[in-house]
Amino acid sequence: MEYTRLGRSGLTVSRLVLGTMNFGSRTSEEDSHALMDRAHEHGITFFDTANAYGEQPGGTEEILGRWFARGGERRERTVLATKLFSPTGDGPNDRGLSARHIRHAIDASLRRLRTDHVDLYQMHHIDRATPWDEIWSAFEVLHQQGKVLYFGSSNFAGWHLAQAQEAAASRHFLGLVSEQSIYNLLSRWAELEVLPAARAYGLGVIPWSPLHGGILSGVLRKQRDGSADRSGTGLWAASLTAHADSVAEYEKLCADLGEDPAHVGLAWLLAQDGVTGPVIGPRTAAHLDGSLRALELKLDADTLAELDRIFPAPGPNGAKPAPEAYAW
Image 1 (cartoon, helix red, strand yellow):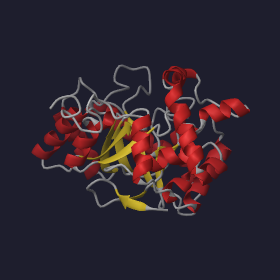
Image 2 (cartoon, one colour; image 1 turned 60 degrees about the vertical axis):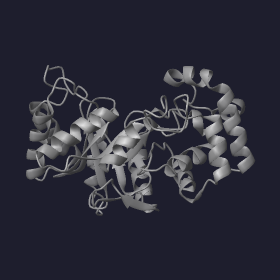
Image 3 (cartoon, one colour; image 1 turned 135 degrees about the horizontal axis):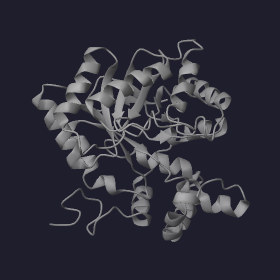
Image 4 (cartoon, helix red, strand yellow; image 1 turned 180 degrees about the horizontal axis):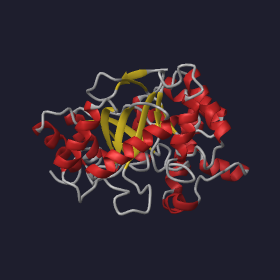
C-alpha cells in the first residue's frame, strides 16, 4: 500500500479509500465486515462513510460500529471519515449545516459508529442558507471537545472552498483539509476550479465515483459477455449512451495495454496532481484485491496523452484551469 498526507495536514492516509455506500443496501453486513477486514490486510486504512448511507439513514454507520466493536484494534487502525448534511429525520432541523444540526448529527454518528471521535468530518454539500461563522463556530466546539480531529467538504465549487477557507482563517482555525469531489476521466469538471482551489489552499482531493458508476470498468465488454451489473444502467445509462464511442476507444486502449479498464481509470486519478486517493466501492473481495493493481500501474506520457484525446479536459482550450480553459 502507498500512503500520503491528507492535504496540508499531518494525517497519513492510504492512497485507496474504502467507500462504504453499498454496505447494508447492496452488500450484506457479513460481507461488509469481511471487506473491511480484507482492506486492513491490504493496508487500506482510510474508510469513508456518511450518516445518510444505508437502507435507512445511519444504517451504514451502524454496520461500521458493530465491526469496530469486534475489537482487534479495528478502530485504532482506521482513519474514519463520515459526512453530514442530508436529511436524517422528518424535522425541519434534521438536515443542513446549522449549529443545531451539526451538534445532533455528530452525537448520533458517534453513537452509531461506537467511537468517541471521527478523524475527518465532511460537509456532504454546501449549505447556502447557513453563514460560515455559524458553521465554523459549531465545528470549533466539536474540535475542542475532541469529537472531530479534521474537517473536510464534499461537492463544493471552487469558490465555496475559498469562502470556507477565508472564513476559517479569519477565526485562526485550520479549516478544511480535504475536498471530496466527483472526478474521473468522464467527469473532469473539477479540473477547472475545484482542483486549482484545493491545491492553492492545501486541500487533499478525494475523488468519488472514480469509474463513473462503473462505465470506466469495462462496461461494454461486460455487456457483451453478460457480466454487467449496474454499469451503464439507471442514472448512468444516459452517460454511457452519450459517450459510447469514447468508452469503446478507452476499452480498446486498455486491451492494447493488457490492463483492466478499472485499474487504468484509478491509475489515471492517482497520477493527477493534488489527488490524495480515489474512493473505491468494491462489493467482493476479488474487486478489492484487484484494485491494488492501480497502485502499481504507472501510465507513461503517451498513454496519458491518449487518454486526454479520448476524454478531453473541459473547456475549448483543454487541460487548463479556469479562466485559461475558456479564455485567454
